[in-house]
Image: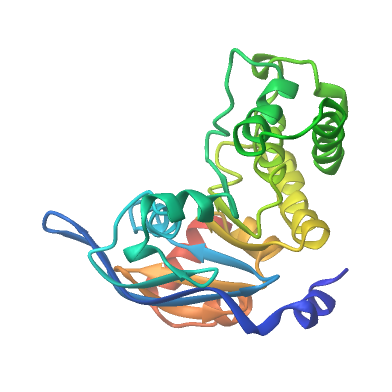
Length: 259
């Protein structure tokens, strides 16, 4: 499926995330200064920005890991700024969070790492069902052969893919990727970018991809939003965002592709 075909599959009448007037500060440091952002069903949205610009803060607020100071954050029809702890736990089961460091348990095999969220969240599964679900997500990320290995035996790219598989095993409706290509070589980064697109197509996810890697942004983003000085200064396709005379935008592009 090429990008144009996929764009036609995005449901622009269905907002799975809607953010209005979001503000977040840490003391005198104003990280998010009143941002608006929507994510549509089956869309890959890339949030670009330099380190320390609030990208990770944004997805932590979306998943309820941080509280907003002001604004409205609706996720799958629920306002996470006023949600009860019990409802937040239910909502999080519908959101997949792919951490930058993969967040695997070093003392568990790949199989046990993947089984862990299943056993914790779905108490009545039979052994056969668990095995089938583990094998399905491992096949989806192309790593069935690693099922009995320990995380220490895997490469950085493999650990990243197993982390994504563990997130997918609960069939989330929304995927949040935090710097998915950080610390990876160019070839492995390309494999992760392709995997993000395959996950979107196979599992019908809507995704926010946090990155400062423009190759990742161009490869995965149906739409790109650039976070500068605590606000979204540019939104659109990759080419639209970088068709700008804004020196901050040009410097970001040059840093990635020229230096």
